[in-house]
Amino acid sequence: MPVILGIESSCDDTAAAVIRDGKLLANIVAGQEVHKQWGGVIPELASRAHQQNIVPVIDQTLQQAGILPCEIDAIAFTRGPGLLGSLLVGASFAKGFALALGKPLIEVNHMHAHILAHFIDDGSAKENPEFPFLCLTVSGGHTQLVRVDDYKTFSILGETIDDAAGETFDKTAKILGLPYPGGPLVDKLAKEGNPNAYKFPIAQIPGLDFSFSGLKTSVLYFVRDEMEKDAAFLEKNISNVCASVQFTIVKTLLQRVEQAMAKTGLKQIALAGGVSANSGLRLSLQELGKKNNWKVFIPPFEYCTDNAAMIAMNGYFKFSKNDFVGQDIAPLARLTL
Ligand code: KG4
Ligand code: ZN
View (cartoon, rainbow, N blue to C red):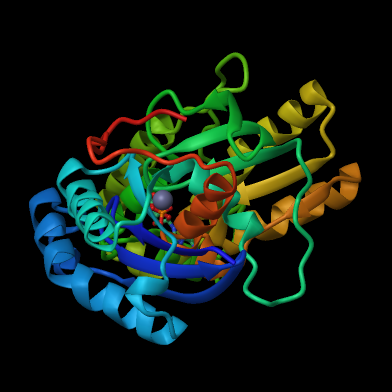
């Protein structure tokens, strides 16, 4: 009955979770309001906020789980990728706590954790993907098509050569004057708009890679030109712009998914990362899955964006293989898949 404490601090969410014998007992995420006024995450402010939040978040998580520190069997933490100052807070806390409790440490790759979030067991009835499967990981920093052969064998089949899908949502929101993080707001406004109102380009690049920087630039120039003609353009048409940009991002992503599924012959496709909360992407992938007879796995909203349940879940897999690390472990901002 291993009890795993998971700690996540790679960007601007301080999160902790407890998994006992593979079952989620508590999962707490503290966001950071401080970045809103700057229109993006300020690394220095993020690490300071983690420093303030980490002890109360872990305290509350253990209380909610009904677990005493002495009952913890291992501590799993995010080693990277992420903002170094943010990662250092979680990693240093995990190392100190493990040392004090005399328990092993488990390092977790944040991108593996997003994918393995599909295996979180919170008591709700759901089917898990079976290895091997294809995963489209779409977050603020990453856009990757990954073949997953087991809990530690991941191969990147394609990835973005410039901006990530989440970044494209957030930058579009910024151009439209919406606050950070803009992805959920673009999604909300898109529901009231026409996805075919405006046409934006889909980058034509070889292989299974993605490119979003052209789309971002084209949205910037389009809005600038329309505003020059009519200063009230955005006021009248913001929903149509959101729906059209979202349609283009989703179409770009799903084109590659279809190609990767055909190339690998896989029949299961999973979504992971913050952008998998996008309602347009969720719906379109379900429809594409039906058309192609694939099994589609979409995580519940709370496990799409950054959370520590996914870190504890990854820790649980590693615990079963005695996959521990020593106190000399250091976080890595650019840890690869
Ligand atoms: O995985 P995540 O929480 O953090 C990273 O590891 O990056 O992803 C955050 C990203 C942000 O870019 C945010 O705008 C985007 O996910 N996001 C969304 C939605 N919810 C979150 N993008 C589009 N539609 C949403 N509903
Ligand atoms: Zn993430």
